[in-house]
Image (cartoon, rainbow, N blue to C red; front, side, top):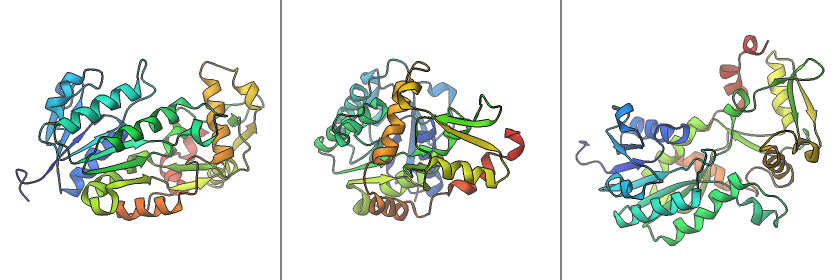
Length: 302
C-alpha cells in the first residue's frame, strides 16, 4: 500500500524505550504510516515517516501532532521531574479526541491502592491506572490498554547487582525471594503488542488489557537462572521498614516489592490477557534466560 493510502499512527515518546519500540514495530509491520512525536524533532530526523514536535506539558502542540492520525500511542514518564501523568494524559486524550483519532492505546499499570485496599502506596503504578477511566470515557471508536512488565533491563540498569557487605555481587531487597510474583519482560518487545493491537482492532480495540510478559518469576529464580549461566550472584532479603529508610525514594521501592509479594506485579490472574497479548503480537515474548544470556554476559559481572 502506498504511504499516501496508509492510515497514520502518532507515537508519543518516540525517543524513549516504549515509544521507540512502538515506532520500530509499526515500521517493521508496514501497515501504517508512522509519525514520531518528540519535544526535539530537529534531533531525530529520519526516526519515522514523519517527525513532529509534541510536548505533553504544552497542550497547544498536540493539535498539530495528532492532526490526521487514525491512531495514537501514549506513554508518560513518571520519573521525569515535575511530571503530572494525569494532567499530561488528559491533555493528550482531549487533543486526540478533538483530532478525530479512532484508536487510542495507553500504556498503563495496575491500580495498587485500589487492589491493596489502600494498604500499599505505589504512585508510579497507580498514577497510570487513574488515567484508564479518562481513556474509557473519552468515547474513542477503539481503545486498548497495554501493560508494561518489570523490565528485564532493570537488572542491568537501575537494579544492577551491587557489591554487598560480604564481598559478593548481588542484591539486598525487601522481598521474600521464594515468592513468585514478578511478571517480567523485555520492554523493547512491547512494540509488537501495540502494532498488533492497531492491526487487529476487532481483537484488541474494545478496552482489552494486553500485558507484555516474557516470564513470571521469584527473585530466587532470577538469581538461580543467572548463576546457572555462570554468574555468582547473591541475594539477601531486607526488612521493608529498614529498606524504606536507606535513601530517598526507597519507601516506594519497598512498597513496590511488597506489592509484588502480596498481589503479584499484575495484581490478578492475567493468563487470558497475556495469551491475547501474545496472539495479537504474533509471537511469544523472549524468556528471561534467553534475554540474560544475550544481555548479561558473565565477564561483565566478574
